[in-house]
Image 1: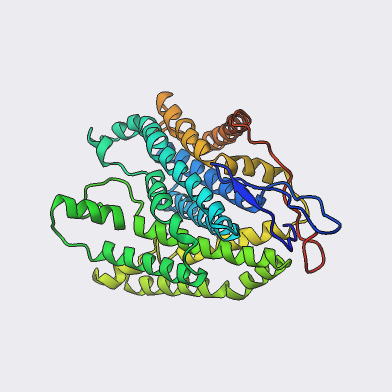
Image 2: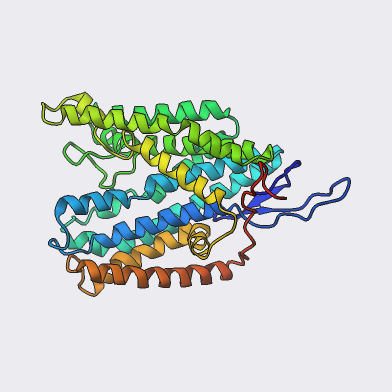
Length: 402
């Protein structure tokens, strides 16, 4: 990262690219640090690739892997909460970095524009990609009005939450984020057994649908939980900004090392509690600590995101694999939609749904990633987004190089 005594102005493109512009200096001006925060682009690209792998695994034949192993692998490849965490980190960084209300308003407008694209463009394209897949599994035709994608949840977060992020103190964001995670899980566990259609729909949107209870929606992307994850990410982004502006990014890494045991202990305690209650009667406490990514195991996932961020920051140079991932991160909306067509729609068209062997799936995934990288790179060039050098890595000293 770059050492900035006076933080240069920044703008953000629709895909979340940070572009820095030089400001006049009183004496001995340093060259501007063009480029992007590669850590954000790389992490988002990684989680897009994880989600693509998880979607492709659904094409495996039933005997390709033992069921429990397949479920474990699929759980490990869920990149949704990681992507949302990094998206919150980027929003917190950008909004807190902008010194004037006018610049913050400009960033908020860009997020609003992105939300409109998610609703008007991404949603119908995803529906088109998945309609044949869902119909092949016997899902009824009302899929069109009962499907809620993660892109829809993200759009709501962009529209309703982003404008308030910069108005909240960092600690308030963190407390509110944790509170929303807890509230979402409580609402999911204590939902009424019966209710009107409107009430059930509202609970599905806020807490996620329960397939074993009355529900309206099919997908499971709870707004309260996703908003909580986003706010926690924005708090992390502010902590990173503070370290960068102090000229000592190593302090961010040191802070992560100090606090890392806390989320890991929380996740371990939740899992231990669930293990003790697992063979007993179904209770609200057992349902509350059930290992899902929206509460009990999210602290461990957050720890993984922080560890990955620190590993990227600690490197002294940018590697080729980071550049590959960063392309997916910079074009995350385009790549996320495209991977559904490559990983699910095309195998369905070819008759490979539930018929792929594990070696065939691995070979297909490698080829698909190469193809997705090619079209993502082309899309980026057509959009006029020029790839700039990454900001400097940490030096051997306490402060990053200018």
